[in-house]
Length: 258
Image (cartoon, helix red, strand yellow):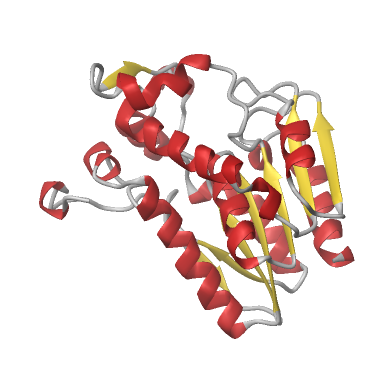
């Protein structure tokens, strides 16, 4: 990370700021995805709080601010952020659970390999990505700095999301995609070391992650407790989509059983 290249006027959007609620002795670490926002988890966060959990929702470095800040962050920065947060929670609370979305699912699997948390949930985990060119990003980053994104500003109503879209979603930072692919490689290489009870949630309506992420994870991990939930219409950001209430309920039940 080159700190000198981060603009001095950098601010964190209200949609990307970290949240923490001190509840009971059981803690949940929530991990958002690549170019994602903490606001993606606001509904699930509130549901977990209402169940009495301590909940930590950190902001991954470079997210929720601007494109320059994002470019100067790395996959190792993102991993170190959630690793530090897990260690802190583990030091203070009886049990720690983890739930991650997309790239956050990769980070969840890596943390599970290292720490063996009480239970984990991976939602639309970026293990099987539909756009195959994503896997070429470690080589493409030397040729193409950015690619055009599919985001359309006119489809947004919220001014904060419009501002963030112009920074993150109107174009794709190829070097950062390569960082995510590095995390994917790390997660896959050590899947067999995951022994925590694992719930995998995917959707046929997800245009980013393919449902075959389920067999990849379930055949790869060593956990004796593994379940999955297949949705039909939910978009990639499952926790903020049409099935969010059902997903939140299933996650809470999963953690309570463990």
